[in-house]
Length: 231
Image (cartoon, rainbow, N blue to C red; front, side, top):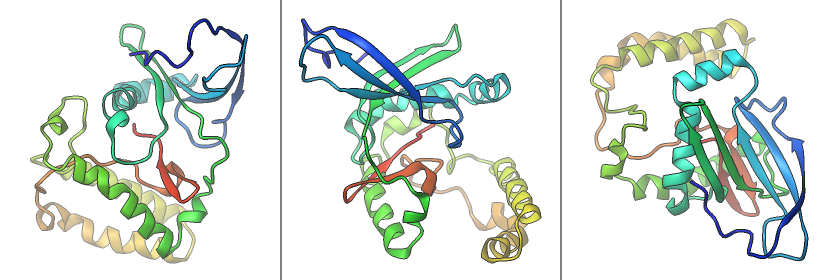
């Protein structure tokens, strides 16, 4: 849907200049910043961030098949406006399933600290966990978490297939990573994965989780933590 009312009449958009800000940053889709010029002074955003499907047909088909694009649009449309953690404000969240297309227009938070290394300390990680906890509390055993567009992780009856995929990823890390802590962790995980389905039974209760919770999807805005990329 389009969350209207952000450009008050009779203000009109005179010009939009777009800059690619996602290239080389690991985004699966196209991400641009749009600088907006109006025909008169206005209490409206001077820039926004726009997310679109990427041009690579292989990646596009893969992500469409897994509903990742649609999931993020629905998240920003239905959950983000009332979520108890900081995410960019959404101005427009539209899906055209017939055309396999979507668009997200989000708040441009401007100059933010999105250096992943900034979160790799004990104190920084503790602050991140404190920041995400209200979202877990807000949707704890919430009936809306049974919506079909959400992907269940911890309440599947048989998680062997998911665990096998994770094990394959850990194996790849172990093959490519040189000596160090990460390699040691990967080797340790490999040893215990065969027993995981029986040692870690289906978890209850359930809640909303990010699903791709790592430092590249976090940023600092002042003293606050911002959470991105809710695919």
